[in-house]
Image (cartoon, rainbow, N blue to C red; front, side, top):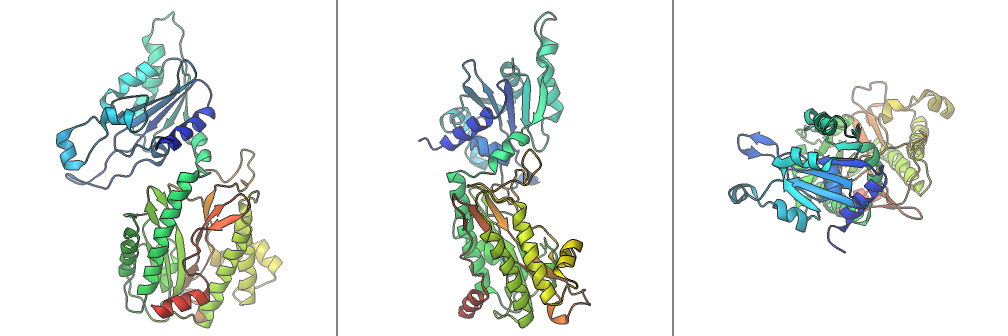
Length: 439
């Protein structure tokens, strides 16, 4: 099969889900300037890339059905420009858009208005994907051009405009084989990154150095990007869920939380591990860590086709609530704690999200009837329970204070169960202490 066959299949699936008289406009991202002529590294819009594979700035794709019902794919992009390509890299150009990326026809992006006018003829339902609103000011003019420009006694097309995301994002929840392979590669790079940080972790090391250690290790495995800013949080810093300062020195006796994932071939990994800076758990650290790990493993065990999404969160909360009661950190019976949701003081957040081209990937968590979506083969998501006891919690025994523990794995739903893609980052107490003891 051609190298771009997955994009053909994805476009076909999308158009089959839309009415026959649909016209799809996909708007790619533009290059962003950092300062003067220094540009940020370009990253394409995910929906655009998912359907086209075209990873150049300033491009628009059009999808619609031809006279025989065939799908027509038009790509508008930057033309070849030898002078610009010497400075900023090669371009596919108009010919490349057809030969390399499978467009039926291609045009200079400067011709966008005229190409849309020529293509948008009888279609009455326009679906737009323009995340940054680049063409908001032109959309109505495009849709109304036919009825404003034709003779008064010709048939008029009255067009509706609908966000494409409603139809495309549910399709993106199920990962095809190429996507699964890309996520596996990102997870594999991240496994090496996490192990490198565990090896380098010790008192008086700075969080920033460990963040850089992760980046160095994933680069050695093909990943030049992270899927989100590294969270390397020692001690009480871990009680801030999206801590990004990474500026403090690690102290003996603290726990370290690192939430970091590589991005490779435009797909994300998302792994969190927590462990003692000294490589050996105190009794209090061990109690909280094991409770979080028990919750994670109980939720993972529930993963199989047909399981409602919310069962994973509920399982985590049930396990952690019981454990917090046993440790004396929550008061009341299990039934009282669950009814009052007093466990939320220490658990704080939900326990998972879709994973894909975005680290918090798109797609609904409910079906069209409003019920929780049931798991299906090909879904990939995180499960990430955590317990957070800030230093300011003076009503909690001191041994537990200033501790944030989260453990996060990346899970693939298979035909008969699940696969933990990130399980090879040490996660049990024994594995962590053994691994860090060798470091």
